[in-house]
Length: 455
Image (cartoon, rainbow, N blue to C red; front, side, top):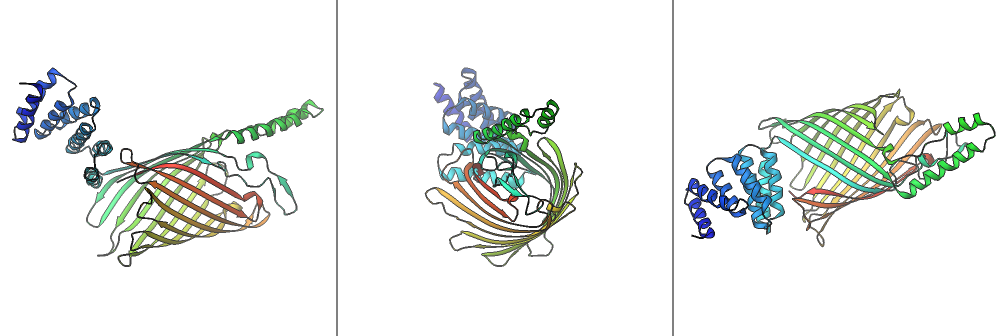
């Protein structure tokens, strides 16, 4: 009997409900060739039928590693996912399903893998999202768009050093958001959450050259002074050349989220609270408590309204007054006949602090449109917002200050490109802040890629 005939015998035994005999056949084939992917897959299937899920994972993982054939990688990955799910390792099973999706030969198989993934997502008490990206940006330091600005009085105009003006470069961001289902009933769901986000930067060659040139010019002016003591005093006051990491930031938070259906037939109400800590330029910056309540009302099959109340108290490690922020927002959403989604929103925000420029009120108008069908393999989403901020007294202006911020974001998802269940998304972000004080005029332009789950 040839090895192929012996393998076919093992497959027949498995189909006839004799998994132990099929396992014996697979073991004999693996004695002859330990990297025989077909035999490894047969052995994994037999182990699953025998309830030996731990060994099923081992055989399926080995098969996935040794084979280069797509159909065998698909089969091995799905078997590994099934075995891990039987061991209650739902997160590992989900990872294997993403591997299986990569080798799905057709839409039907890809959909079946996605359905299995969704089942595990509902069952798994853990839910985790990863974020990462590299984004070129015109303003990594939140700098002014102007070279000069009045300060403290309309009659005192100062030149802004290069650090105070916008610096172009690259943003490197990453983060993880994970939650654990603590309790679930027919009308309520409670989850504990953990989130960390970090962002650092690299200066562009142009910005780095500008900073170096300004530093060299300042040093030359100091050294031109006739007295050595004056030179040393002047040099000590020269701002060092900044690095992109000087503008890095990170935030870590823990929280509890509770969803509750308060009345029969109603949408759930969300209650959330979290505590967190922020860093800037590698140093502890602030800590905060954030609480929110939100609810949505389904008006009919196509229209819904949502509202949210949110409050935050932020305290700083430096001797800086606290900032207390309250926000009330509402949003109307409509699904059109072609399944496109249109949204309009408004937010009222009040920030109270003894720090003058952090004490303000603002109103934010927003609109969004998401296209349901791809156009030439691209799925578009557009969001626009306008914020009007009123500051009664600005320390830098020496009086009232008004800011007007217009933002436009566009996302372009590549619907026909997929990598392990993720699709690339091009994000374009344009923002312009116009202030009555030139120091706070801002221009932001960034274009970057992100990854979005396909299911």
